[in-house]
Length: 241
Image (cartoon, rainbow, N blue to C red; front, side):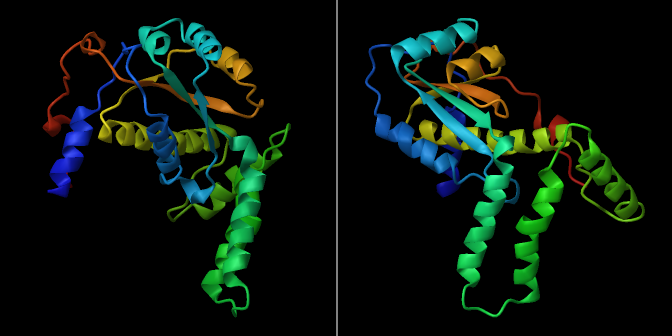
């Protein structure tokens, strides 16, 4: 029964590109859906994301122009900008470490506990730190080369590798948000067509932030579904070995 319910939510979710300007929107549902998005799986619980909810008409109009005035951005009553915040890695590594210290307070640390402390205190700085000259990237590449010579090893060494990782986590949060909205029969449309530099300027995002996607949301109209949903056959994309 629960599986059928989830299937209905997934089936309901479509990329709706025209919204009803007169429809009432329960903003508490948007708030709750964003809170649920924070529970999404993410790499090492670093939570390197930020969700910017754009609802003021003036700001929304400006963002829509930065989205090339595509209909979803222009007609939706609310826009959610999903940002990656790779620049916050130090704060989040320390936040995780502080939480572990609270959990372990008054407890004799096991080997597993010590490894968890080292994970955020030592490994995350090694993993995320970058410098202008690329020395940290070079060091990570050397570690990967040596440690991964004849055994499985995490092959993430460059700033680009890190960007891919944080964008994956942020995209998972965006999906959680869209499915939550669908469960309340609200419509969404994830957009990748935008001037990222202009969007960042409009929302005062820091230099280290990146726009993962912008999601329009509200009550869609029938003309907002441009065509029937089509997908290639499952046999083409699902492979069991």
